Length: 72
Image (cartoon, rainbow, N blue to C red; front, side, top):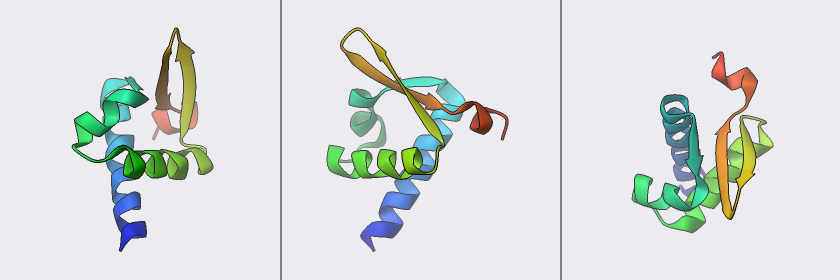
């Protein structure tokens, strides 16, 4: 059950990144109305699949889709 929820959350994050380009990791729990633990697990899922990239801007960590995903 939890694995399915993590996968669903990963899909929602992917769609948000497709629409917004870059998002601060710290803002995702609020955007998704989910706890940070679930969001972090979903980010790990996307990172493991090579679907996201991380960038540091000052004190914020931003994520965006990997170049290969932007074309999808």
